[in-house]
Each structure stands twice: as structure tokens, then as C-alpha cells.
Length: 456
Image (cartoon, rainbow, N blue to C red; front, side, top):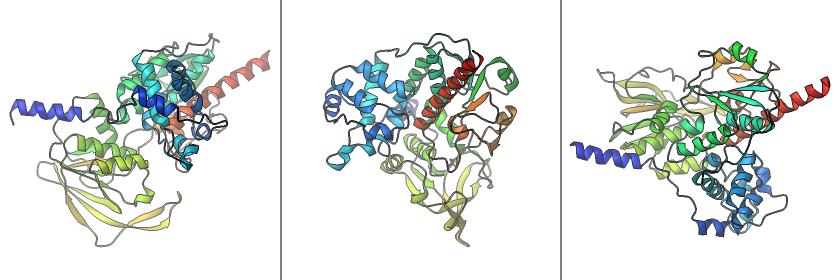
């Protein structure tokens, strides 16, 4: 292939990562906003984990007050621009819309995007910091939960510093959700909204390495642990150290931070797992020019953890799903490159502790798929050593908190986001992380307010 042809291919592949869905036009947004009934005690508000006043923000679109609309959204949800793109709205606000019973629900997510896109394009700064109250709070992790906690605390007047291990803040929204669904520019704008409140963000700073937990504990009045989760764990099978085996988290991150390459062109890819990250790994592979992409999942469609809209999106991209299928070993050639994957057929047995039926291999059911690439997407491991450096009680890396206060076993440390998310605690969503961040800020503020009143 000549240089010119190769360049054309790379340009095409790069274009594949442009945002899939265009936003609403001005006319479409106006017409959609005017469909809203502006319900009293609107069920859509109750269905939103961050409690956005949806009728109000839509009414402001209808009246041409786009800054007011964006501020209404972002007041309730500090990552509302990202959530407009990645929330499972059909399960949340749109699913609760009263118009489901007659016509079709209001396109709340699209209207939310319309208002926040206007604010981004017009470089609006929506908030200003509260008067300083003399208290200092450290936030470990600059993802949705950490940013939300920081924003609320800054509005209350706290001196807030975020410690972020990556080059940029934003967490999952910056690095972990595919560009064609959530461009980095959206996450950067949300980070800038927080920075505008005099919040200091120390990037490229890994707590536990660059600064100790003790140093942070000694320097701040309160600490918020919002560190999320870590890399994809090992499969524990032969061949997973081969060339051509990828961690889905790192794979998606590379597509957002490095130039697109043609190394997947014409390749056969399997993704192991069936959560949202697995879908992202599969759809990224399609956009990188893979010839065939399969998702292998050891359970059935009913147990899949990916959102319904993610599943439909993957099917539209031509991704194949192999249910009740689990890897046994990865096959390599003499050069250590992936050439195939041997799998078991599975069957579901009795329910486990999480209530889901346990998959077990069917004896003698082994078969081989010819593949060039394997992407692991079987969940994420935990930052256990850092949690223990803070001396916090946890269950396998899931930090234990008092639900009403977000307080950990150390009264000075609060936690929110994926670090407190475990089985049996609902669904881990960007929007729930944002609300937990807000709740944590309120709890810290309430604690200090009580301290002041008790010493007055």
C-alpha cells in the first residue's frame, strides 16, 4: 500500500471517531421544547438522579434563554453536558415522561445537549465561587464524582484542591467513553467550569506515590476519595500476555489520546465481557477497520450489564454477540501473536450471591475461533493499596460509607463515585456519581456548620 493510500485510510478511520449523532437544529429544538407540558411535580425530575428541573430548562429553551437553560442543568448536574450524551435517558427522565402514554417522550437528553452545547460554543462561565470560609478540602480524583464535589464545595466557599493522576481531569468522561459518543472537548469544558471557581487541579499527581495519604490528611480539614476504579483484571488463562491482547480501558483511552492507526484494519477481533466498556471496545474496533468483531459473554442477553441503547448501537455497527461463551485459552503463533481463542460453551446453574445464575462450562464443548485481537472487558480492579493507605474499611476495594453522610471509617475522609460502588448497590452511572459528589459536599458542609454552631 502506497503512502497516499495509507493516508486516505487513516483519514477515513479518524473520521469514524467523530461524534455519531448531530445535535438538534435551532428549529428542531424549539419545536421539541414547545411539546413539553411543563408538568407540575414532573415525574422526569424524580427520575433524574441529580434532580434537574427539566420543565424549567426546557421552558427556557422555548423562550430563547439558553444561558438560563444551561445554568439550570449545570446547577443540578455539574457534568450535565456529558450526561446529555451518555445517560440512559430512556430508562431515566424520558422513560418517566407522561407523553409516553400518548405520543412519544420529550427528547430531554437532546434538549439538554442543545442548551449545554450553546453554553460551550459561547464560552459561558455559569458560576462564581462563594466567599471563602477558611476551610480546605482535598479531593482525590478528578472524575465526575470528584468534579461535582469540588464544584459544590467551591460554591460554599471552601478552598478546594483536586489531585488527579492523569494529564487531564475529567476521569471516565475524558478518557473512558468513546469519542464518537463523548468528545473530550465536552469533558474539558466541564472541568473548566470547576476551575473557574478557583478550584486548584493538580494533574499528573498520583496520591500514594507523588504525595502521601498522610501528607494530605495533615494538610486539609477534609478529604474526598473519588478515585474510581483501576485496570481490567487478568482473565487467568493461558496466552493473555500475547501480542494482540488489550485492556479495554487502555484501548479506549488510546483512541482518545493518540493518533488513530490502521493496525486493526482487516483484523478479526473478540471482546470478552458485555458491559458498556465492552461495547465501547467493540465499536471502536469496527471504526478502526476490523473485518469482524465478536463479543463473547459467559451469560445471556438478560444478564448483560450494558445499557440497551449501547447494545442496539453495537448491533447496528455489525458487532456479533456470542452468548453463553467463555474463553479457555488464547492461542498464539511462534512469534507470540494471537491467532485464535479456544472457548467453552456455558450453561447457567444456580444463582450466586449477587442473585445471578452462575455460568458453568459444558463438558466437551470446546471450540476455536480464529482471531487476531482479544480485548479484555471483564470489569475493573480496585485501588486497594491506596484505600488502605488512608486506613479505610473496605470490602474488596469497595469503600464502606455511611449512606446518609458519605463518611468512611475515618471521620475526616468521605468517599463517592465508583470507589463505593459494588454489587447490589444499583447501577454505576456518570449521573449517579455526580449526585454522590454533590451529596458528599453537602455532608462536609453540614458537618463544618455543626462544628461552628457547637463551638459558638
